[in-house]
Image 1 (cartoon, rainbow, N blue to C red):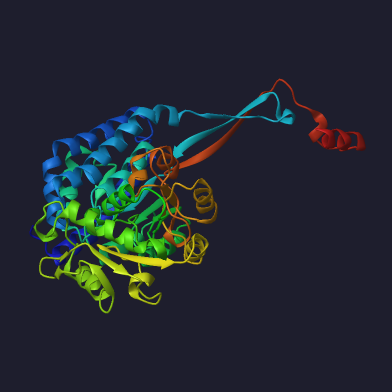
Image 2: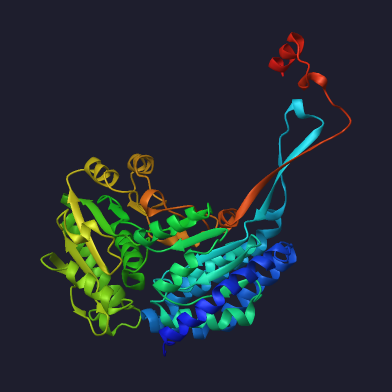
Amino acid sequence: MQKVSETVHQANFSSHRETNIDELKRTFATGRTKPYQWRVEQLTALKQLIQENSNAIILALHTDLGKSETESWLTEIGYSIADIKGNLKRLKSWMKPTKISTPMITQPGKSYTISEPLGVALIIGAWNYPFQLVITPLVAAMAAGNCAVIKPSELSEATSALLAKLVPKYLDNAAFKVIEGGKDETTELLAQPFDKYFYTGGEQVGRIVMAAAAQHLAPVTLELGGKSPCVVDGETNLDVAVRRIVWGKWMNAGQTCVAPDYVLIEEKYLADFSQRLIAEIKKQYGKEPSQNTDYGRIINQRHCSRLINYLEGENIIHGGKHNLDNKFIEPTVVIQPAASSALMQEEIFGPILPIITLKSKLQILDFITAKPKPLAAYVFTSNAKFEAEFIERVSAGSICINDTNIFLVNHDLPFGGVGTSGMGQYHGKCGFDTFSHTKSVMKRSFKFDAAIRYAPFSKFKLMLLKKF
Protein backbone atom coordinates (compact mmCIF):
# COMPACT_ATOMS: atom_id res chain seq x y z
CA MET A 1 0.00 0.00 0.00
CA GLN A 2 1.44 3.32 -1.05
CA LYS A 3 2.29 5.62 1.83
CA VAL A 4 1.07 9.20 1.77
CA SER A 5 3.86 11.73 1.44
CA GLU A 6 5.11 12.66 4.90
CA THR A 7 5.33 16.36 4.00
CA VAL A 8 1.77 16.48 2.71
CA HIS A 9 0.55 14.46 5.68
CA GLN A 10 2.17 16.77 8.24
CA ALA A 11 0.85 19.83 6.47
CA ASN A 12 -2.65 18.35 6.45
CA PHE A 13 -2.41 17.48 10.15
CA SER A 14 -1.09 20.90 11.15
CA SER A 15 -3.85 22.70 9.29
CA HIS A 16 -6.71 20.56 10.61
CA ARG A 17 -5.79 19.20 14.05
CA GLU A 18 -7.06 22.18 16.04
CA THR A 19 -10.18 22.42 13.88
CA ASN A 20 -10.84 18.70 14.34
CA ILE A 21 -10.32 18.70 18.09
CA ASP A 22 -12.25 21.92 18.57
CA GLU A 23 -15.08 20.47 16.52
CA LEU A 24 -15.23 17.42 18.76
CA LYS A 25 -15.29 19.63 21.86
CA ARG A 26 -18.12 21.67 20.39
CA THR A 27 -20.01 18.47 19.56
CA PHE A 28 -19.62 17.18 23.09
CA ALA A 29 -20.69 20.51 24.58
CA THR A 30 -24.05 20.25 22.80
CA GLY A 31 -24.87 17.05 24.68
CA ARG A 32 -25.28 15.18 21.41
CA THR A 33 -23.28 12.14 22.53
CA LYS A 34 -25.02 11.59 25.86
CA PRO A 35 -28.39 10.01 24.94
CA TYR A 36 -28.68 6.23 25.01
CA GLN A 37 -30.01 6.14 21.45
CA TRP A 38 -26.99 7.96 19.98
CA ARG A 39 -24.60 5.58 21.71
CA VAL A 40 -26.51 2.56 20.42
CA GLU A 41 -26.53 4.00 16.90
CA GLN A 42 -22.77 4.53 16.92
CA LEU A 43 -22.00 1.10 18.40
CA THR A 44 -24.27 -0.50 15.82
CA ALA A 45 -22.59 1.46 13.02
CA LEU A 46 -19.17 0.35 14.28
CA LYS A 47 -20.31 -3.28 14.24
CA GLN A 48 -21.57 -2.75 10.70
CA LEU A 49 -18.20 -1.26 9.69
CA ILE A 50 -16.44 -4.42 10.85
CA GLN A 51 -18.90 -6.90 9.40
CA GLU A 52 -19.15 -5.25 5.99
CA ASN A 53 -15.38 -4.81 5.64
CA SER A 54 -14.05 -7.99 7.25
CA ASN A 55 -12.26 -9.06 4.05
CA ALA A 56 -10.50 -5.71 3.77
CA ILE A 57 -9.50 -5.90 7.45
CA ILE A 58 -8.10 -9.40 6.97
CA LEU A 59 -6.09 -8.21 3.96
CA ALA A 60 -4.70 -5.23 5.88
CA LEU A 61 -3.69 -7.42 8.83
CA HIS A 62 -2.01 -9.89 6.48
CA THR A 63 -0.16 -7.04 4.79
CA ASP A 64 1.08 -5.62 8.09
CA LEU A 65 1.78 -8.78 10.09
CA GLY A 66 1.25 -11.80 7.86
CA LYS A 67 -1.79 -12.81 9.91
CA SER A 68 -3.94 -15.68 8.70
CA GLU A 69 -7.67 -15.28 8.16
CA THR A 70 -8.47 -17.45 11.19
CA GLU A 71 -6.13 -15.59 13.51
CA SER A 72 -7.40 -12.24 12.24
CA TRP A 73 -10.96 -13.30 12.96
CA LEU A 74 -10.21 -14.81 16.37
CA THR A 75 -8.06 -12.02 17.79
CA GLU A 76 -9.24 -8.89 15.99
CA ILE A 77 -12.49 -9.04 14.00
CA GLY A 78 -14.61 -11.52 15.95
CA TYR A 79 -13.14 -10.27 19.21
CA SER A 80 -14.19 -6.68 18.44
CA ILE A 81 -17.69 -7.70 17.32
CA ALA A 82 -18.20 -9.68 20.54
CA ASP A 83 -17.10 -6.66 22.56
CA ILE A 84 -19.61 -4.41 20.80
CA LYS A 85 -22.43 -6.92 21.30
CA GLY A 86 -21.65 -7.14 25.00
CA ASN A 87 -21.74 -3.37 25.36
CA LEU A 88 -25.02 -3.09 23.46
CA LYS A 89 -26.59 -5.78 25.65
CA ARG A 90 -25.66 -4.14 28.94
CA LEU A 91 -25.41 -0.43 28.12
CA LYS A 92 -28.88 0.55 29.35
CA SER A 93 -28.25 -0.95 32.79
CA TRP A 94 -24.80 0.66 32.99
CA MET A 95 -26.30 4.09 32.33
CA LYS A 96 -28.89 3.83 35.10
CA PRO A 97 -28.25 5.82 38.30
CA THR A 98 -26.89 3.72 41.16
CA LYS A 99 -28.64 4.13 44.49
CA ILE A 100 -26.41 4.91 47.48
CA SER A 101 -27.46 4.67 51.12
CA THR A 102 -28.27 7.97 52.82
CA PRO A 103 -27.31 8.54 56.49
CA MET A 104 -29.97 9.39 59.06
CA ILE A 105 -28.68 12.92 59.64
CA THR A 106 -29.46 13.82 55.99
CA GLN A 107 -32.96 12.33 55.98
CA PRO A 108 -35.38 12.83 54.36
CA GLY A 109 -33.30 12.63 51.24
CA LYS A 110 -31.76 10.28 48.73
CA SER A 111 -28.28 9.68 47.30
CA TYR A 112 -27.19 8.20 44.01
CA THR A 113 -24.41 8.26 41.40
CA ILE A 114 -24.57 8.92 37.68
CA SER A 115 -21.99 7.90 35.09
CA GLU A 116 -21.29 10.83 32.81
CA PRO A 117 -18.87 10.91 29.83
CA LEU A 118 -15.52 12.61 30.32
CA GLY A 119 -15.52 14.52 27.02
CA VAL A 120 -13.05 14.11 24.17
CA ALA A 121 -10.69 11.15 24.44
CA LEU A 122 -7.41 10.46 22.67
CA ILE A 123 -6.93 6.78 21.81
CA ILE A 124 -3.43 5.76 20.68
CA GLY A 125 -3.29 2.23 19.33
CA ALA A 126 -0.51 -0.34 19.03
CA TRP A 127 0.85 -2.13 15.97
CA ASN A 128 0.72 -5.75 17.14
CA TYR A 129 -3.08 -5.93 17.09
CA PRO A 130 -3.57 -2.77 15.07
CA PHE A 131 -7.31 -3.09 14.56
CA GLN A 132 -8.55 -4.56 17.83
CA LEU A 133 -6.38 -2.35 20.07
CA VAL A 134 -7.99 0.73 18.53
CA ILE A 135 -11.53 -0.59 18.29
CA THR A 136 -11.98 -2.00 21.81
CA PRO A 137 -11.06 1.23 23.64
CA LEU A 138 -13.17 3.10 21.08
CA VAL A 139 -16.12 0.86 21.96
CA ALA A 140 -15.69 1.74 25.64
CA ALA A 141 -15.36 5.46 24.92
CA MET A 142 -18.38 5.37 22.62
CA ALA A 143 -20.55 3.43 25.07
CA ALA A 144 -19.70 5.96 27.78
CA GLY A 145 -20.85 8.81 25.51
CA ASN A 146 -17.54 10.41 24.58
CA CYS A 147 -16.07 11.87 21.41
CA ALA A 148 -12.70 10.50 20.38
CA VAL A 149 -9.61 11.09 18.26
CA ILE A 150 -8.17 7.78 17.10
CA LYS A 151 -4.44 7.50 16.39
CA PRO A 152 -3.54 4.11 14.85
CA SER A 153 0.07 2.94 14.87
CA GLU A 154 2.13 4.17 11.94
CA LEU A 155 4.02 0.84 11.85
CA SER A 156 0.89 -1.02 10.75
CA GLU A 157 0.42 1.14 7.67
CA ALA A 158 -2.25 -0.88 5.88
CA THR A 159 -4.54 -1.13 8.90
CA SER A 160 -4.02 2.54 9.77
CA ALA A 161 -4.97 3.61 6.25
CA LEU A 162 -8.03 1.36 6.29
CA LEU A 163 -9.27 2.81 9.58
CA ALA A 164 -8.78 6.34 8.24
CA LYS A 165 -10.86 5.39 5.21
CA LEU A 166 -13.70 3.54 6.96
CA VAL A 167 -14.37 5.48 10.16
CA PRO A 168 -15.66 8.62 8.37
CA LYS A 169 -17.99 6.47 6.27
CA TYR A 170 -19.73 4.83 9.21
CA LEU A 171 -19.40 6.92 12.37
CA ASP A 172 -20.54 10.40 13.36
CA ASN A 173 -17.89 12.64 11.79
CA ALA A 174 -18.57 15.39 14.29
CA ALA A 175 -17.69 13.04 17.15
CA PHE A 176 -14.93 10.72 15.86
CA LYS A 177 -11.75 11.45 13.92
CA VAL A 178 -8.84 9.31 12.76
CA ILE A 179 -5.43 10.98 12.54
CA GLU A 180 -2.60 9.04 10.95
CA GLY A 181 1.10 9.71 11.27
CA GLY A 182 4.21 9.01 13.31
CA LYS A 183 6.14 10.63 16.11
CA ASP A 184 5.53 14.24 15.03
CA GLU A 185 1.78 13.78 14.73
CA THR A 186 1.60 11.96 18.05
CA THR A 187 3.60 14.71 19.73
CA GLU A 188 1.21 17.32 18.32
CA LEU A 189 -1.78 15.35 19.58
CA LEU A 190 -0.34 14.91 23.05
CA ALA A 191 -0.02 18.67 23.37
CA GLN A 192 -3.77 19.07 23.00
CA PRO A 193 -6.09 19.32 26.04
CA PHE A 194 -7.98 16.04 25.83
CA ASP A 195 -10.29 14.95 28.64
CA LYS A 196 -8.91 11.40 28.62
CA TYR A 197 -5.68 9.84 27.31
CA PHE A 198 -5.69 6.13 26.47
CA TYR A 199 -2.45 4.56 25.25
CA THR A 200 -1.49 1.00 24.35
CA GLY A 201 2.19 0.33 23.74
CA GLY A 202 5.57 0.35 25.43
CA GLU A 203 6.72 1.70 28.77
CA GLN A 204 8.96 4.44 27.33
CA VAL A 205 6.21 6.12 25.31
CA GLY A 206 3.78 5.44 28.16
CA ARG A 207 5.82 7.77 30.36
CA ILE A 208 5.60 10.46 27.66
CA VAL A 209 1.83 10.06 27.41
CA MET A 210 1.45 10.27 31.17
CA ALA A 211 3.57 13.42 31.32
CA ALA A 212 1.45 14.99 28.57
CA ALA A 213 -1.78 14.13 30.38
CA ALA A 214 -0.37 15.63 33.58
CA GLN A 215 -0.02 19.00 31.85
CA HIS A 216 -3.82 19.08 31.53
CA LEU A 217 -4.56 17.23 34.80
CA ALA A 218 -6.43 14.68 32.68
CA PRO A 219 -6.92 11.01 33.54
CA VAL A 220 -4.79 8.48 31.67
CA THR A 221 -5.00 4.76 31.03
CA LEU A 222 -1.76 3.01 30.06
CA GLU A 223 -1.88 -0.52 28.67
CA LEU A 224 1.80 -1.43 28.53
CA GLY A 225 3.37 -4.87 28.84
CA GLY A 226 6.29 -6.49 30.56
CA LYS A 227 7.71 -9.95 30.93
CA SER A 228 4.76 -12.23 31.62
CA PRO A 229 5.99 -15.41 33.37
CA CYS A 230 4.59 -18.87 32.73
CA VAL A 231 5.12 -21.39 35.52
CA VAL A 232 4.76 -25.09 34.73
CA ASP A 233 4.31 -27.61 37.50
CA GLY A 234 5.95 -30.73 36.09
CA GLU A 235 3.40 -32.96 37.82
CA THR A 236 0.41 -31.49 35.96
CA ASN A 237 -1.04 -32.42 32.54
CA LEU A 238 1.96 -31.52 30.39
CA ASP A 239 0.37 -32.49 27.07
CA VAL A 240 -2.41 -29.94 27.47
CA ALA A 241 -0.05 -27.41 29.04
CA VAL A 242 2.40 -27.38 26.11
CA ARG A 243 -0.48 -27.19 23.62
CA ARG A 244 -1.82 -24.07 25.30
CA ILE A 245 1.61 -22.53 25.77
CA VAL A 246 2.49 -22.96 22.08
CA TRP A 247 -0.84 -21.41 21.11
CA GLY A 248 -0.44 -18.43 23.43
CA LYS A 249 3.24 -17.82 22.76
CA TRP A 250 3.42 -18.13 18.98
CA MET A 251 0.10 -16.57 18.05
CA ASN A 252 0.89 -13.46 15.99
CA ALA A 253 4.53 -14.66 15.91
CA GLY A 254 4.87 -13.90 19.61
CA GLN A 255 3.89 -10.25 19.21
CA THR A 256 1.27 -10.27 21.95
CA CYS A 257 1.52 -8.14 25.08
CA VAL A 258 0.20 -10.96 27.29
CA ALA A 259 2.09 -13.81 25.58
CA PRO A 260 4.16 -16.00 27.91
CA ASP A 261 7.52 -14.23 27.90
CA TYR A 262 9.44 -17.03 29.57
CA VAL A 263 8.76 -20.40 31.21
CA LEU A 264 9.81 -21.32 34.74
CA ILE A 265 10.00 -24.99 35.65
CA GLU A 266 11.75 -27.17 38.23
CA GLU A 267 14.96 -28.50 36.68
CA LYS A 268 14.02 -32.17 37.18
CA TYR A 269 11.13 -31.75 34.70
CA LEU A 270 13.05 -29.86 32.01
CA ALA A 271 13.86 -32.76 29.67
CA ASP A 272 10.31 -34.10 29.58
CA PHE A 273 8.74 -30.67 29.21
CA SER A 274 11.10 -29.43 26.46
CA GLN A 275 10.61 -32.61 24.41
CA ARG A 276 6.84 -32.26 24.57
CA LEU A 277 7.07 -28.53 23.80
CA ILE A 278 9.18 -29.05 20.66
CA ALA A 279 6.89 -31.83 19.46
CA GLU A 280 3.87 -29.56 19.89
CA ILE A 281 5.52 -26.68 18.01
CA LYS A 282 6.09 -29.02 15.06
CA LYS A 283 2.52 -30.28 15.31
CA GLN A 284 1.00 -26.80 15.21
CA TYR A 285 3.36 -25.11 12.73
CA GLY A 286 5.03 -27.98 10.87
CA LYS A 287 8.68 -28.71 10.16
CA GLU A 288 8.91 -25.61 7.95
CA PRO A 289 7.02 -22.76 9.65
CA SER A 290 8.20 -20.41 6.88
CA GLN A 291 5.82 -22.26 4.56
CA ASN A 292 2.94 -22.29 7.02
CA THR A 293 0.25 -19.71 6.21
CA ASP A 294 -0.97 -19.84 9.82
CA TYR A 295 2.32 -18.44 11.10
CA GLY A 296 2.79 -14.66 11.00
CA ARG A 297 5.68 -12.30 10.40
CA ILE A 298 7.47 -9.64 12.43
CA ILE A 299 6.10 -6.13 11.93
CA ASN A 300 9.26 -4.73 10.28
CA GLN A 301 12.94 -5.44 9.70
CA ARG A 302 14.06 -3.29 12.61
CA HIS A 303 12.13 -5.38 15.11
CA CYS A 304 13.17 -8.56 13.33
CA SER A 305 16.82 -7.58 13.59
CA ARG A 306 16.36 -6.80 17.30
CA LEU A 307 15.02 -10.31 17.91
CA ILE A 308 17.74 -11.98 15.85
CA ASN A 309 20.37 -10.18 17.94
CA TYR A 310 18.74 -11.54 21.10
CA LEU A 311 19.73 -15.07 19.99
CA GLU A 312 23.45 -14.41 19.71
CA GLY A 313 25.36 -16.72 22.03
CA GLU A 314 22.25 -18.37 23.48
CA ASN A 315 21.62 -22.10 23.94
CA ILE A 316 18.97 -22.73 21.28
CA ILE A 317 17.35 -26.16 21.52
CA HIS A 318 14.79 -25.56 18.78
CA GLY A 319 14.37 -23.10 15.93
CA GLY A 320 16.57 -20.08 15.41
CA LYS A 321 16.22 -19.93 11.64
CA HIS A 322 15.38 -16.51 10.29
CA ASN A 323 15.08 -14.43 7.15
CA LEU A 324 15.43 -10.70 7.70
CA ASP A 325 14.19 -9.80 4.20
CA ASN A 326 10.95 -11.70 4.82
CA LYS A 327 10.71 -10.56 8.46
CA PHE A 328 10.60 -14.22 9.49
CA ILE A 329 11.85 -15.92 12.64
CA GLU A 330 10.74 -19.48 13.29
CA PRO A 331 9.42 -20.58 16.69
CA THR A 332 12.52 -20.68 18.87
CA VAL A 333 13.21 -22.17 22.30
CA VAL A 334 16.20 -21.13 24.40
CA ILE A 335 17.45 -22.83 27.57
CA GLN A 336 18.83 -20.96 30.59
CA PRO A 337 19.69 -17.52 29.20
CA ALA A 338 21.77 -15.41 31.57
CA ALA A 339 19.86 -13.09 33.90
CA SER A 340 21.77 -10.18 32.35
CA SER A 341 20.90 -11.16 28.75
CA ALA A 342 18.54 -9.11 26.60
CA LEU A 343 16.15 -12.07 26.58
CA MET A 344 15.68 -11.71 30.33
CA GLN A 345 16.02 -7.94 30.63
CA GLU A 346 13.67 -6.82 27.84
CA GLU A 347 10.13 -7.78 26.90
CA ILE A 348 10.79 -10.17 24.01
CA PHE A 349 7.66 -9.45 21.97
CA GLY A 350 8.56 -12.07 19.40
CA PRO A 351 8.66 -15.84 18.72
CA ILE A 352 11.43 -16.70 21.21
CA LEU A 353 10.64 -18.59 24.41
CA PRO A 354 13.33 -18.88 27.10
CA ILE A 355 13.05 -21.68 29.66
CA ILE A 356 14.50 -21.05 33.12
CA THR A 357 14.99 -23.95 35.54
CA LEU A 358 15.08 -23.65 39.31
CA LYS A 359 15.26 -26.20 42.11
CA SER A 360 11.87 -25.65 43.76
CA LYS A 361 8.48 -23.98 43.50
CA LEU A 362 9.51 -21.59 46.26
CA GLN A 363 12.51 -20.43 44.20
CA ILE A 364 10.20 -19.97 41.21
CA LEU A 365 7.87 -17.71 43.18
CA ASP A 366 10.80 -15.76 44.58
CA PHE A 367 12.15 -15.30 41.04
CA ILE A 368 8.87 -13.77 39.84
CA THR A 369 8.24 -11.53 42.82
CA ALA A 370 11.74 -10.06 42.60
CA LYS A 371 10.93 -8.65 39.15
CA PRO A 372 8.65 -5.80 38.01
CA LYS A 373 4.94 -6.64 38.01
CA PRO A 374 3.89 -8.15 34.66
CA LEU A 375 0.76 -7.58 32.58
CA ALA A 376 -0.14 -11.27 32.90
CA ALA A 377 1.10 -14.30 34.81
CA TYR A 378 0.39 -17.95 34.07
CA VAL A 379 0.59 -21.11 36.12
CA PHE A 380 -0.09 -24.68 35.02
CA THR A 381 -0.71 -26.87 38.04
CA SER A 382 -3.06 -29.44 39.55
CA ASN A 383 -1.80 -28.60 43.03
CA ALA A 384 -4.47 -26.50 44.78
CA LYS A 385 -2.06 -25.33 47.48
CA PHE A 386 0.52 -24.11 44.95
CA GLU A 387 -2.21 -22.47 42.88
CA ALA A 388 -3.43 -20.53 45.93
CA GLU A 389 0.11 -19.53 46.84
CA PHE A 390 0.77 -18.33 43.28
CA ILE A 391 -2.37 -16.17 43.30
CA GLU A 392 -1.49 -14.79 46.72
CA ARG A 393 2.14 -13.94 46.04
CA VAL A 394 2.26 -12.93 42.38
CA SER A 395 1.07 -9.40 41.57
CA ALA A 396 0.13 -9.06 37.91
CA GLY A 397 -2.46 -7.31 35.79
CA SER A 398 -4.19 -10.65 35.23
CA ILE A 399 -3.56 -14.24 36.31
CA CYS A 400 -4.62 -17.22 34.24
CA ILE A 401 -4.50 -20.74 35.63
CA ASN A 402 -3.91 -23.71 33.31
CA ASP A 403 -4.11 -21.69 30.09
CA THR A 404 -2.64 -18.67 28.30
CA ASN A 405 -4.20 -15.56 26.74
CA ILE A 406 -7.71 -17.08 26.73
CA PHE A 407 -8.81 -14.96 29.70
CA LEU A 408 -9.12 -12.05 27.28
CA VAL A 409 -12.13 -13.75 25.69
CA ASN A 410 -14.13 -12.93 28.84
CA HIS A 411 -15.10 -9.32 28.13
CA ASP A 412 -16.52 -8.97 31.63
CA LEU A 413 -13.07 -9.46 33.18
CA PRO A 414 -11.28 -6.12 33.69
CA PHE A 415 -8.02 -5.95 31.75
CA GLY A 416 -5.06 -3.75 32.57
CA GLY A 417 -1.61 -3.62 34.09
CA VAL A 418 -0.11 -2.84 37.46
CA GLY A 419 3.12 -1.03 38.22
CA THR A 420 5.29 -0.71 35.12
CA SER A 421 2.92 -2.93 33.12
CA GLY A 422 0.32 -0.18 33.08
CA MET A 423 -2.44 1.58 34.97
CA GLY A 424 -6.19 1.62 34.57
CA GLN A 425 -8.42 -1.11 33.17
CA TYR A 426 -11.00 -1.62 30.48
CA HIS A 427 -13.25 -4.24 28.79
CA GLY A 428 -16.96 -4.55 29.55
CA LYS A 429 -18.36 -2.47 32.41
CA CYS A 430 -14.81 -1.59 33.48
CA GLY A 431 -14.21 0.04 30.06
CA PHE A 432 -17.44 2.01 30.40
CA ASP A 433 -16.28 3.21 33.83
CA THR A 434 -12.79 4.06 32.53
CA PHE A 435 -14.25 6.60 30.11
CA SER A 436 -16.82 7.91 32.59
CA HIS A 437 -16.91 10.19 35.60
CA THR A 438 -18.98 8.87 38.49
CA LYS A 439 -20.94 11.91 39.58
CA SER A 440 -22.37 11.88 43.10
CA VAL A 441 -25.82 13.37 43.70
CA MET A 442 -27.73 13.99 46.94
CA LYS A 443 -31.27 15.37 47.00
CA ARG A 444 -32.83 16.69 50.21
CA SER A 445 -36.40 17.45 51.06
CA PHE A 446 -37.69 20.76 52.45
CA LYS A 447 -40.06 18.91 54.80
CA PHE A 448 -37.69 18.61 57.74
CA ASP A 449 -34.79 20.88 58.64
CA ALA A 450 -33.10 19.99 61.91
CA ALA A 451 -31.75 22.98 63.81
CA ILE A 452 -29.01 20.85 65.32
CA ARG A 453 -26.44 21.75 62.66
CA TYR A 454 -27.02 25.51 62.77
CA ALA A 455 -25.48 28.14 65.06
CA PRO A 456 -25.75 29.12 67.77
CA PHE A 457 -24.31 25.86 69.11
CA SER A 458 -24.77 24.41 72.58
CA LYS A 459 -23.59 21.47 74.66
CA PHE A 460 -26.94 19.80 74.04
CA LYS A 461 -26.53 20.13 70.25
CA LEU A 462 -22.99 18.80 70.49
CA MET A 463 -24.23 15.82 72.47
CA LEU A 464 -26.84 15.03 69.81
CA LEU A 465 -24.28 15.44 66.98
CA LYS A 466 -21.94 12.99 68.69
CA LYS A 467 -24.80 10.53 69.09
CA PHE A 468 -25.97 10.64 65.48
